[in-house]
Length: 312
Image 1 (spheres, rainbow, N blue to C red):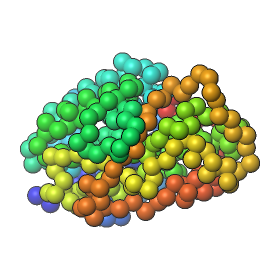
Image 2: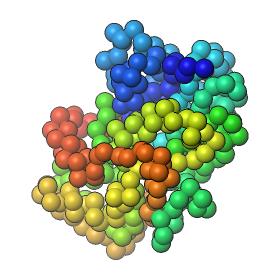
Image 3: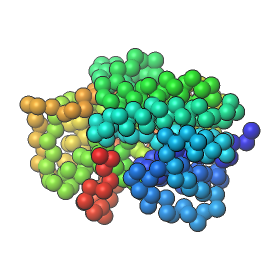
């Protein structure tokens, strides 16, 4: 089958609004299926493209979802409640969306369709020491990580699936998010002129949203090599401690940085990650953390700071 018709669940979101134009430029017919929980202005630019279709729908709605899936060849499942704050705000919704919603997607698929699932390195939880690879044990420590780990197991039961565990995203998107670590740190430094940092030595691993979108295109193009497997998506050079990120921003902006010794960050993730598996197939990221920080500072001059871009 020629997989030219693509459905993106959650396509109006942070990743989807970067992925959609990339796929349209490649000649794919793209349908975005989204409940517009965070609005749909990120999609307005594509309305005049005849290869673009929008369906307002919820992945909880089995009938509507199934009808949309059945008309497409490749399903890219992005729809989720994403991040620790958003999931903690409504854990019941997080579970029903991230787990039951994923189950609805998988149950709507036919064997000849392709499923590419957006997972997360948050599934590793707290894993200090050697870099996690796809065979490392999972230790999710948040509602978000736990629901995404459970969703991943559901997806892998479908024999034509690829699971992409994305590093923590950063960078500018038409549906920008300011609750992501690097994006949030730049926001705090630029707007509030101060940042209180907990657990400064804890390590994270990062991927620019454009590279995340490119990895999905790569998975479509290399599906036969990647199906029925899991891939970490990012780059070994983008493993940094929280302190290192804060100091990179301080090199560019004047702000007060305070390292807190008491209390702590609710998000206790601490890991570095290996990306050798996907790199061995030829996928490489293009954007560095430094480039992402520079573009976020530039974008900060444009944002209206009324908190419309947070997921919680």
